[in-house]
Length: 258
Image 1 (tube, rainbow, N blue to C red):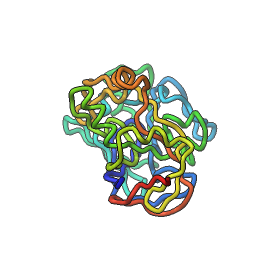
Image 2 (spheres, helix red, strand yellow; image 1 turned 30 degrees about the horizontal axis):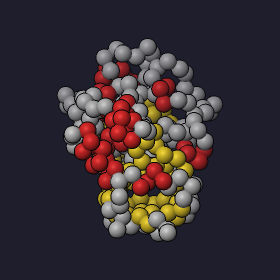
Image 3 (cartoon, rainbow, N blue to C red; image 1 turned 45 degrees about the vertical axis):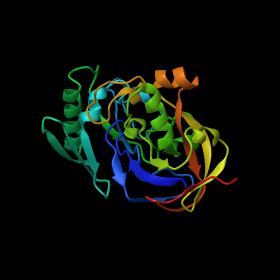
Image 4 (cartoon, helix red, strand yellow; image 1 turned 90 degrees about the vertical axis):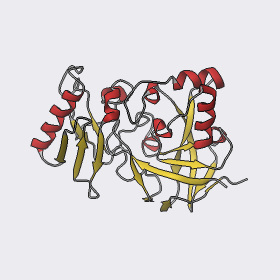
Protein backbone atom coordinates (compact mmCIF):
# COMPACT_ATOMS: atom_id res chain seq x y z
CA UNK A 1 0.00 0.00 0.00
CA UNK A 2 1.34 3.44 -0.95
CA UNK A 3 1.23 5.70 2.11
CA UNK A 4 1.92 9.41 2.52
CA UNK A 5 4.82 9.61 4.97
CA UNK A 6 5.67 13.34 4.91
CA UNK A 7 4.12 16.64 3.85
CA UNK A 8 6.09 19.88 3.42
CA UNK A 9 5.68 23.45 2.34
CA UNK A 10 8.52 25.83 1.48
CA UNK A 11 7.22 29.34 2.24
CA UNK A 12 10.32 31.05 0.82
CA UNK A 13 11.81 29.75 -2.41
CA UNK A 14 15.21 28.16 -1.74
CA UNK A 15 14.87 28.20 2.05
CA UNK A 16 14.01 25.52 4.58
CA UNK A 17 11.06 23.14 4.59
CA UNK A 18 8.19 23.25 7.06
CA UNK A 19 6.69 19.85 7.96
CA UNK A 20 2.92 19.53 8.03
CA UNK A 21 0.60 17.00 9.66
CA UNK A 22 -2.25 17.81 7.31
CA UNK A 23 -2.95 20.33 4.58
CA UNK A 24 -6.23 21.70 3.12
CA UNK A 25 -6.11 21.58 -0.67
CA UNK A 26 -8.18 22.99 -3.51
CA UNK A 27 -8.58 22.00 -7.13
CA UNK A 28 -6.14 23.82 -9.38
CA UNK A 29 -4.02 25.16 -6.51
CA UNK A 30 -0.82 24.04 -4.83
CA UNK A 31 0.00 23.76 -1.12
CA UNK A 32 -1.13 26.85 0.82
CA UNK A 33 1.78 29.29 1.35
CA UNK A 34 4.17 27.11 -0.64
CA UNK A 35 6.81 29.22 -2.48
CA UNK A 36 4.72 32.26 -1.57
CA UNK A 37 7.86 34.35 -1.07
CA UNK A 38 11.24 34.51 -2.78
CA UNK A 39 14.46 36.52 -2.54
CA UNK A 40 15.56 38.26 -5.72
CA UNK A 41 19.23 38.06 -6.69
CA UNK A 42 19.58 41.84 -6.81
CA UNK A 43 20.13 42.12 -10.56
CA UNK A 44 16.60 43.26 -11.45
CA UNK A 45 13.92 45.53 -10.08
CA UNK A 46 10.85 43.83 -8.65
CA UNK A 47 7.40 45.30 -9.31
CA UNK A 48 4.56 43.37 -7.66
CA UNK A 49 1.96 44.91 -9.97
CA UNK A 50 3.82 44.06 -13.19
CA UNK A 51 5.42 40.78 -12.12
CA UNK A 52 5.21 37.76 -14.43
CA UNK A 53 7.00 34.44 -13.77
CA UNK A 54 10.76 34.63 -14.15
CA UNK A 55 13.47 31.93 -14.36
CA UNK A 56 14.65 30.49 -11.06
CA UNK A 57 18.11 31.95 -11.67
CA UNK A 58 16.63 35.42 -11.04
CA UNK A 59 16.21 34.46 -7.38
CA UNK A 60 18.41 33.16 -4.59
CA UNK A 61 18.30 29.38 -4.73
CA UNK A 62 20.34 26.35 -3.76
CA UNK A 63 21.63 25.62 -7.24
CA UNK A 64 23.82 28.72 -6.98
CA UNK A 65 23.78 29.62 -3.29
CA UNK A 66 24.26 26.53 -1.14
CA UNK A 67 24.66 28.64 2.03
CA UNK A 68 20.88 29.07 2.04
CA UNK A 69 20.52 25.46 3.23
CA UNK A 70 22.03 26.39 6.60
CA UNK A 71 19.26 28.88 7.37
CA UNK A 72 16.21 27.80 9.34
CA UNK A 73 12.98 29.63 8.64
CA UNK A 74 9.44 29.58 9.97
CA UNK A 75 6.41 31.39 8.61
CA UNK A 76 3.69 32.27 11.11
CA UNK A 77 0.31 30.59 10.71
CA UNK A 78 -1.24 33.82 9.49
CA UNK A 79 1.57 34.34 6.96
CA UNK A 80 2.46 37.78 8.35
CA UNK A 81 5.79 37.06 10.09
CA UNK A 82 8.90 35.17 9.10
CA UNK A 83 11.55 33.94 11.54
CA UNK A 84 15.03 33.28 10.15
CA UNK A 85 17.99 31.82 12.03
CA UNK A 86 21.59 31.46 10.84
CA UNK A 87 24.09 28.85 12.11
CA UNK A 88 25.98 31.52 14.07
CA UNK A 89 22.86 32.24 16.11
CA UNK A 90 21.86 35.40 14.27
CA UNK A 91 18.08 35.54 14.24
CA UNK A 92 15.50 37.73 12.57
CA UNK A 93 11.81 38.07 13.34
CA UNK A 94 10.35 39.91 10.37
CA UNK A 95 6.99 41.57 9.90
CA UNK A 96 6.42 40.89 6.23
CA UNK A 97 4.28 44.00 5.76
CA UNK A 98 6.93 46.31 7.22
CA UNK A 99 9.36 47.97 4.79
CA UNK A 100 12.00 48.44 7.47
CA UNK A 101 11.94 44.71 8.26
CA UNK A 102 12.14 43.86 4.56
CA UNK A 103 15.21 46.10 4.32
CA UNK A 104 16.73 44.22 7.28
CA UNK A 105 16.07 40.97 5.43
CA UNK A 106 17.88 42.30 2.35
CA UNK A 107 20.95 43.18 4.39
CA UNK A 108 20.85 39.81 6.12
CA UNK A 109 20.76 37.77 2.91
CA UNK A 110 23.51 39.90 1.38
CA UNK A 111 25.64 39.21 4.47
CA UNK A 112 24.96 35.45 4.38
CA UNK A 113 26.16 35.28 0.77
CA UNK A 114 29.29 37.27 1.54
CA UNK A 115 29.20 39.80 -1.26
CA UNK A 116 28.55 37.29 -4.04
CA UNK A 117 25.61 39.29 -5.39
CA UNK A 118 25.73 42.12 -7.90
CA UNK A 119 22.94 44.07 -6.22
CA UNK A 120 20.73 44.13 -3.14
CA UNK A 121 18.53 41.04 -2.69
CA UNK A 122 14.88 41.65 -1.90
CA UNK A 123 12.33 39.46 -0.14
CA UNK A 124 9.25 39.61 -2.36
CA UNK A 125 5.73 38.24 -2.75
CA UNK A 126 3.53 38.12 -5.85
CA UNK A 127 -0.13 37.86 -4.89
CA UNK A 128 -1.80 34.89 -6.54
CA UNK A 129 1.45 33.54 -7.95
CA UNK A 130 4.01 31.07 -6.67
CA UNK A 131 7.76 31.19 -7.17
CA UNK A 132 8.00 27.58 -8.29
CA UNK A 133 10.73 26.44 -10.68
CA UNK A 134 8.09 25.52 -13.26
CA UNK A 135 6.05 28.71 -12.92
CA UNK A 136 7.49 29.90 -16.24
CA UNK A 137 6.02 26.86 -18.05
CA UNK A 138 2.31 27.38 -17.37
CA UNK A 139 -0.17 28.54 -14.70
CA UNK A 140 -1.16 24.89 -14.16
CA UNK A 141 2.41 23.90 -13.35
CA UNK A 142 2.87 26.97 -11.16
CA UNK A 143 0.03 25.62 -9.01
CA UNK A 144 1.05 21.96 -9.14
CA UNK A 145 2.01 19.70 -6.22
CA UNK A 146 5.32 17.84 -6.27
CA UNK A 147 5.54 14.18 -5.23
CA UNK A 148 8.56 12.02 -4.38
CA UNK A 149 8.62 8.24 -4.15
CA UNK A 150 10.95 7.25 -1.30
CA UNK A 151 11.68 3.91 -3.01
CA UNK A 152 13.18 5.85 -5.92
CA UNK A 153 15.33 7.91 -3.54
CA UNK A 154 16.62 4.75 -1.87
CA UNK A 155 17.36 3.09 -5.20
CA UNK A 156 19.33 6.07 -6.43
CA UNK A 157 21.21 6.23 -3.13
CA UNK A 158 22.13 2.55 -3.41
CA UNK A 159 23.51 3.11 -6.88
CA UNK A 160 25.49 6.10 -5.62
CA UNK A 161 26.79 4.15 -2.62
CA UNK A 162 25.36 6.56 -0.07
CA UNK A 163 22.17 7.48 1.75
CA UNK A 164 20.32 10.47 0.27
CA UNK A 165 18.24 12.78 2.43
CA UNK A 166 14.85 12.93 0.65
CA UNK A 167 14.64 16.65 1.43
CA UNK A 168 17.26 17.23 -1.26
CA UNK A 169 14.29 16.95 -3.64
CA UNK A 170 12.14 19.59 -1.90
CA UNK A 171 8.80 17.91 -2.62
CA UNK A 172 5.41 18.63 -1.08
CA UNK A 173 4.36 14.98 -0.74
CA UNK A 174 6.59 12.00 0.07
CA UNK A 175 5.16 8.52 -0.09
CA UNK A 176 6.38 4.97 0.41
CA UNK A 177 5.11 1.51 -0.41
CA UNK A 178 5.29 1.44 -4.20
CA UNK A 179 8.05 0.22 -6.54
CA UNK A 180 10.92 2.54 -7.36
CA UNK A 181 10.45 4.86 -10.33
CA UNK A 182 6.77 3.99 -10.88
CA UNK A 183 5.86 7.68 -10.54
CA UNK A 184 7.64 8.62 -13.75
CA UNK A 185 4.89 6.83 -15.70
CA UNK A 186 2.07 8.88 -14.14
CA UNK A 187 2.11 11.77 -16.62
CA UNK A 188 -1.45 12.17 -17.98
CA UNK A 189 -2.62 9.47 -15.55
CA UNK A 190 -5.22 10.04 -12.83
CA UNK A 191 -4.50 9.15 -9.22
CA UNK A 192 -5.83 9.87 -5.75
CA UNK A 193 -4.04 11.53 -2.84
CA UNK A 194 -6.15 10.34 0.03
CA UNK A 195 -9.64 11.33 -1.16
CA UNK A 196 -8.38 14.00 -3.56
CA UNK A 197 -8.35 13.27 -7.30
CA UNK A 198 -5.25 14.42 -9.17
CA UNK A 199 -3.51 14.02 -12.50
CA UNK A 200 0.18 13.68 -13.30
CA UNK A 201 1.36 16.59 -15.45
CA UNK A 202 5.18 16.56 -15.63
CA UNK A 203 8.19 14.57 -14.52
CA UNK A 204 10.52 16.61 -12.32
CA UNK A 205 13.87 17.34 -13.95
CA UNK A 206 16.62 17.68 -11.37
CA UNK A 207 19.26 20.41 -11.21
CA UNK A 208 22.39 21.00 -9.14
CA UNK A 209 20.29 22.14 -6.16
CA UNK A 210 19.95 18.44 -5.27
CA UNK A 211 23.72 18.24 -4.84
CA UNK A 212 23.42 20.37 -1.68
CA UNK A 213 22.96 18.69 1.70
CA UNK A 214 19.72 20.23 3.08
CA UNK A 215 21.12 20.38 6.63
CA UNK A 216 24.79 21.30 6.33
CA UNK A 217 24.75 23.23 3.06
CA UNK A 218 27.66 21.16 1.77
CA UNK A 219 27.73 20.56 -1.98
CA UNK A 220 28.56 16.90 -1.51
CA UNK A 221 26.77 14.85 -4.20
CA UNK A 222 26.23 14.58 -7.93
CA UNK A 223 22.55 13.72 -8.14
CA UNK A 224 21.72 14.83 -11.71
CA UNK A 225 24.87 13.14 -12.98
CA UNK A 226 23.99 9.91 -11.16
CA UNK A 227 20.47 9.94 -12.62
CA UNK A 228 21.80 10.30 -16.14
CA UNK A 229 24.53 7.71 -15.61
CA UNK A 230 22.19 5.09 -14.14
CA UNK A 231 18.89 5.76 -15.90
CA UNK A 232 19.69 7.91 -18.96
CA UNK A 233 17.40 10.67 -17.69
CA UNK A 234 17.60 13.42 -15.07
CA UNK A 235 14.16 12.99 -13.49
CA UNK A 236 13.15 12.31 -9.90
CA UNK A 237 9.51 12.71 -8.88
CA UNK A 238 6.46 14.14 -10.60
CA UNK A 239 4.23 17.20 -10.54
CA UNK A 240 0.49 16.64 -10.23
CA UNK A 241 -2.50 18.89 -10.76
CA UNK A 242 -5.19 18.71 -8.08
CA UNK A 243 -8.68 18.02 -9.43
CA UNK A 244 -10.70 18.21 -6.22
CA UNK A 245 -10.92 19.77 -2.76
CA UNK A 246 -10.18 18.20 0.61
CA UNK A 247 -7.62 17.57 3.32
CA UNK A 248 -4.47 15.49 2.82
CA UNK A 249 -2.98 13.95 5.94
CA UNK A 250 0.02 11.91 6.98
CA UNK A 251 -0.86 8.25 6.65
CA UNK A 252 -3.31 8.77 3.79
CA UNK A 253 -3.15 6.35 0.91
CA UNK A 254 -1.88 7.27 -2.55
CA UNK A 255 -3.93 5.23 -5.00
CA UNK A 256 -3.27 4.56 -8.67
CA UNK A 257 -6.42 3.30 -10.48
CA UNK A 258 -5.85 0.21 -12.60
